[in-house]
Length: 431
Image 1 (tube, rainbow, N blue to C red):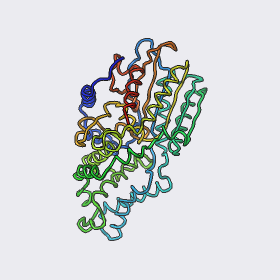
Image 2: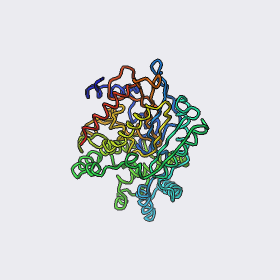
Image 3: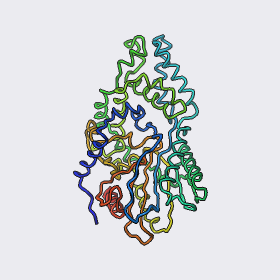
Image 4: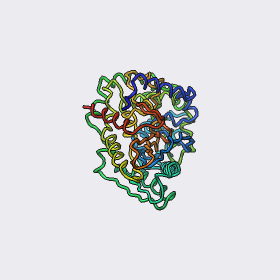
């Protein structure tokens, strides 16, 4: 059996991948697409132009396995918007807003009115994302989504996930009306579709870890320029406006609009400079790494929260491989599942282990690239026929070919038996 590559090789490979992106930096990406700064509020690309590597001779796709995040949504609760809105409203009552501040206040009112009663709901843009993704699934892998093929779909019990699933299935049926489609959303599936490990969550942010994190983000939180732009007397207003909180959450408000039908109105976003957006990305990227990545500060075990899902994906694949025509299995859930799953598997080096937040960007741990709204992980299986014991597969992360931390002689394709052995051994070591 092929042995897993060493940690040294994985780190070197990951660095090469990051450098291979034309030496592109995070701030370059933010300048080109400000939404990248918002991490899990990042929007899924409007178009995918990936060119896929041909399969080894004689191998054809026969089974498709998937876990995807719901599409673009409204903010899940009003608290994130209330923080900056109430600060500006109070400053307005004190006649402390500049003309720019008055415009900001009016724009914030529009956002609040549009979002009221829609907290956490899928947006029209979110539905469009899943229509496009499903259409590409069918067209990229017609051998799987052929006439009469079976498609099993599951979602968590959250409405935006159910609607994302339904939208995708309708589009698949538009592409191939004879597909045999089933869908399910049940509490009985939550143990693998959206498992929340309470013990691991308690370990995420101890008082000692919070102290380290707060020390790291302090230098990124403030924004004197913004305060002077919006408030007449920032020194007076500081009694009712927390500069760090105001800067952070107003920025989030502007970025979140990009997921809604108000995406053309970018006034709230345009008042921020690229370096200010970049600082917010550094704050959030470190937090996501701490809570979902293999951060040494809390033991590096957080990705194991998705151990049940990984075992289920493997077990489902093992069963489907025995079938002549297994079709596809689609799963719709959340970023708090997708990101740790990617880290647990070690896709594209996201199993990075460090206790130094300042190293994340250089080492390529960029959460925005993993879990934008509508993000997805696709496993496509290949063989020459039912009696072919050497099943190959490849992984697509957001429809781009990805690399795994195991050896292969046919990258980006991997031998299924090598992968399942690597993953099951890793899961068996977890206690």
